[in-house]
Amino acid sequence: NAGVTQTPKFQVLKTGQSMTLQCAQDMNHEYMSWYRQDPGMGLRLIHYSVGAGITDQGEVPNGYNVSRSTTEDFPLRLLSAAPSQTSVYFCASSLAGELFFGEGSRLTVL
Amino acid sequence: DAKTTQPPSMDCAEGRAANLPCNHSTISGNEYVYWYRQIHSQGPQYIIHGLKNNETNEMASLIITEDRKSSTLILPHATLRDTAVYYCIVRVRNTGFQKLVFGTGTRLLVSP
Image (cartoon, rainbow over all chains, first blue to last red; front, top):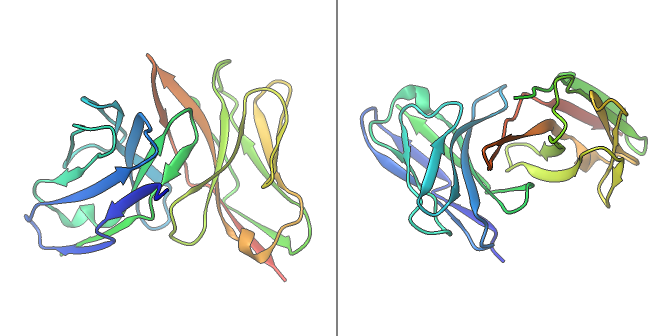
């Protein structure tokens, strides 16, 4: 099994550009979530989903959109990137409680 | 939501037991304690979780106090590869939705 797959692994954007971070899992997990991690800080929850068609905001949702049209995919959209969104982004899925994380997407906004 | 408090850093000699403490004094009766670790910019890795009883798996042991206000993760024979940031997390439940809130964790350095 591939587990949780994130793409791209690295991305550089200019301020104001838009992009989508992709996340896919092949474990048939209902729960999926996005976190960001900044230097010296823990992981902060951006958005999460408890199943296809259901999403909710986490701790730091501003500037990000999500959707969950299938169980497998949970993309994170930045509509107008800002330098404050420079970070490492982790996607995670869960079935019963423990989270399985992807390897991360490192985003730099100039 | 219950919060956790962990020391920012700890050191351990290779081969020795590493005991990582966590305080969660406001934990509710139906909330679990989870431990994860993150090895140098990789995705976090699940270690173990528990509700009331002590738990053990192939990676670690989890000791939860009787009042559930604190817990300790034990790595019985730490190796250099155990150098990582360890997160103690209390599972939050909200009308059936589930999410985990991560803090800043404990940076464990295992030295030869």
